[in-house]
Picture 1: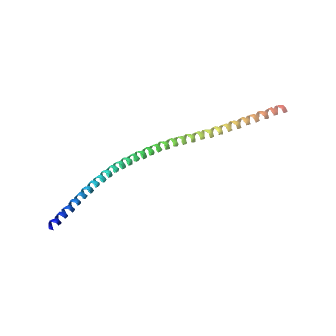
Picture 2 (picture 1 turned 90 degrees about the vertical axis):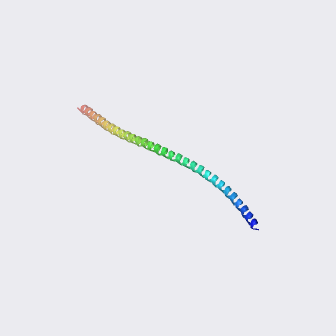
Picture 3 (picture 1 turned 120 degrees about the vertical axis):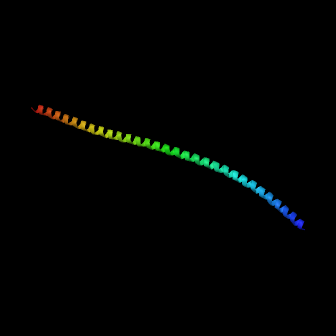
Length: 111
């Protein structure tokens, strides 16, 4: 009977050791999978960081191009307004000269 209890306990101990061994194997597999996933996640995050840096650099370049184009547009608008003012002055001057010539001709005709 004491021998039966010892055999039974040995049997249970062997089963516990077997289950523990299986659990260790599963735990090891889970750890490997976790390490693999962590590596993939780190790689994905690194790629995302690189992508964000590229996007930021590209946006800064585009901002500079847009600012340059806006400055060019502003200069072109100022040049257009300057040309319009000059044309108005020239037209006004021509009209005054024409009016003076007509008045001069009318005065001569009256004489």
